[in-house]
Length: 402
Length: 215
Image (cartoon, rainbow over all chains, first blue to last red; front, side, top):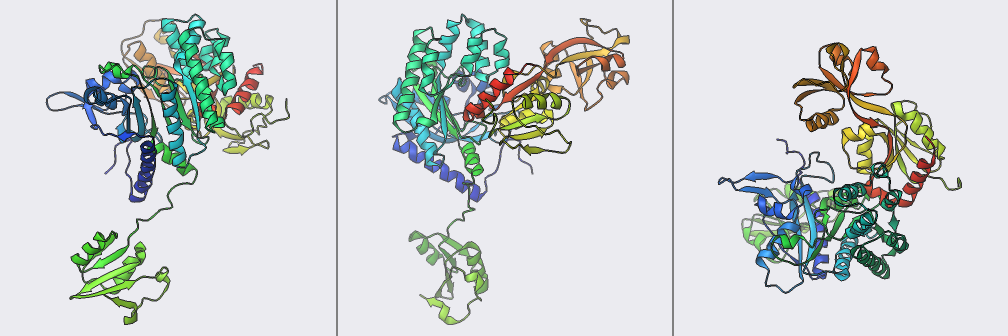
């Protein structure tokens, strides 16, 4: 009766907590005027492969249908949404603002906490908008969303991949050399970087901080696009500061997310006590063109399970909250239906159950009221708050006949 | 420079066993109090607010990847074998050893000798051996052992072994010869990639101090 590796069940109280977070995220998306969409759990393999980088393609759960069409479970939502917008929303005025809260699937070799094979992502895509305003929208929405669920001290590191490109070019690294160096910077493997014999590059890989970091790096940038990117990062830091996020947003020049995917701006959000990022995103201007729609885009996503881990680590989880039940009804479909119609949560009890059993049931579930119908007579019992410590009431005065 | 405790607030994974003495000395050299490993001690909190976790070397990458430790000292050989996402910030230049393929001298193995097309290989380093032979497109049967790997070819369990060699004395003792060197390993200072950002000041300060100390 075992589950396969990397998936889990959600018991009622666990799912209630997860749903609460999902609703809070949806509320933030709504406030930023994003509309939620849904796409199929699985798609044609070739369509997903078209959008995903190698890194994510390698994580696909793949299978064939009976006519041997290669299919795969979606490993993230950005590619399906890029397909959706490219094929079905061409007429929509740009920019398009879409959101999702959806399960995705990744075949991790070693599934573990924070890296499950089925996970829930909550995120947004802003399609058809470029520039700092759009990047700022993704970043600030992520900051607000994490604050909404109770992580108002989460920190965010930002970067723009074009800066590294300009620095590498300035150091004379091109083609495969530049690609390899970029990978090492991304891993922050200083030991291997040192072997390249470029001390300035090793130093660059350690650069992280506020706006004071911009000037020293500007001296290393050699291309117009890297200088433009540096200005954009500076502008974002400035805007974050003006919003009161000054101490919580920093630039980390080695922050490089999936290199095949992200074309410029990128960010990750985290809290001090968790060793992995809680959310992240960036600009992926080359994705929609792969689906024949030449528009830029920026998006971000949060791992809902990771958010739960962060909240649990802080003791902000589940006070094993019980589902609220208003009334226990025994012996009458009509009365139960009437209670539900009045907006009450009704638990149905077996007809003919004894008063002792009904009271015990009500106490066990914290139900304040019992309605009992026996042979056309209706009686209502109010259950006191600490009734479990009182003797079971038996006198007729306790019964409130309707 | 010693007025502020160098690693206050950090949790550092320290390897037990062969690397302990050098790792402890390196940390002491930058001003961290490191009590001797009494064999059973699991966690130590030093006086200046640094938490030291004394761990089996092979467990350290997992502790650091999850962020249960902010950083740690671990051999490169362990990093190859565990393949965890940790940032390798410094080569501490101690704990030098080589990971080699070795075989019995009487079998006429020597460095550069052509190997048979199907081999049984005994090792503790399953993942590293697997990718080494896969890169060379050599089909092998890997046998996972947990100790005294050098015995396997002598007892006829395996044709070859993949093992760590520090001085080569153990190989010579058992009349084994190096067939090929896979890589050289030294101790590395590794950090959790997200914690590097969260505790940037403390971790870069510790990195600077560790790199300053001559090996």
